[in-house]
Length: 355
Figure 1 (cartoon, one colour):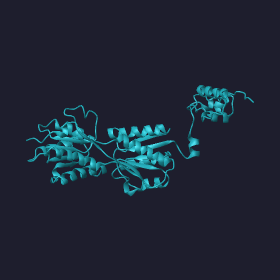
Figure 2 (cartoon, helix red, strand yellow):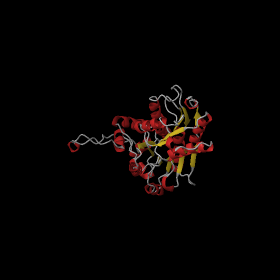
Figure 3 (tube, one colour):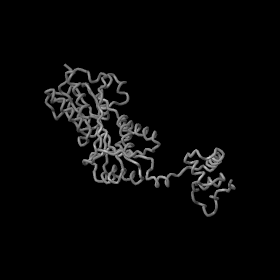
Figure 4 (tube, one colour):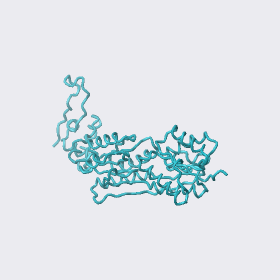
C-alpha cells in the first residue's frame, strides 16, 4: 500500500531562528519520498531488494534535501568507525609523505578513512595524538614513535583492543606489536663499503640525532663497515644532530680544515644529504658523497647523488595491510618486517680520493 507524501519539518520557523539549519534525516527523506523509514534505510545501505520505482523516489528525495548518511549510530552498534590513524614524525619529510600516501591507498581500497597527524618529534604531542585518535574510536593505528615515547599509554590502548603497527622504529618499551622497519644497519654498511671500495679511508658521517633508533643503527652500520675493513673509527668525523644548516656547516668546516680531512662523506638520511650538498658548494674541497634515502632531483645533479635507497611506500603498504589483518581478527605473535635497501650508483660516491 502506498503512503501519502508529507513535507519535512519547517527548519526556518521562529523557533530555529538564529540557529544553523539541522541536517536532513532519514525521516525527512521518507516523508519527502512518501515511503517508509525502513525503505529509506535499505536504499541508503545499498539493499537491492527495494523496487526500482521506490529506490528512484528515495534517491530523488535525497538529492532534493541534500541528505548525507550519518554513520555515528551504525558505528556505535558495530564498534567500528571504518577509519584508521597514522602518526608520523613530519608529513613534509618526503620519506613520511610517501609512507602516508601508501597507507592511504590501502585504506581507500578498504573503504576506510585515514586520519594523519605529525608528532614533530615531540613525545607529549605523540601521546596526545594517539589518545585523541583512540577517543574517536579509530579501528587501528600506525605509529612512528618518538625516541622518548612512554610505553604505558600505548600498552593500555593495545590491551583495550586497539590494533597497532609501528613503522620506521620498533615499538617502545618492549611493547609486543607488529612493526615494519628498514634494515638501517645493513643499508648504512653497504653505503660505507661502497666508499671504501673506491679507495676512501677518511670517511665522515653526518646523521640525525643519536637518540633516534634509525640514526643510531645507521651510525652503527657505518662503524661496522670501517672496522671490518681495518680502518680506525675517528669520532671527530662523526656528527649526530638534527639536520640544520648552521650546525652541519660548522662541523663540515671543522672536518675539512683538519690535518687529515675526510675524502668522503656518508649522510645518514635525506635531510642530512640535502643540507650537506648546500654546504659543500661553499668549499673548494669536494669529497665523495653517499646518502641514505633517495630524494627528488638526486639524479639530476652533476654528478648524480649515489644513495642507499629505502622504500617508504613499501613500508606504508605492508604496515597498512598488516593492520587491517589485525582489525579483521588475525591473532598470533607480533611480526617484524625488515626491508632491505638498494644502492643506487649515480656518480657522487664513485669520486676517488684526491691525490
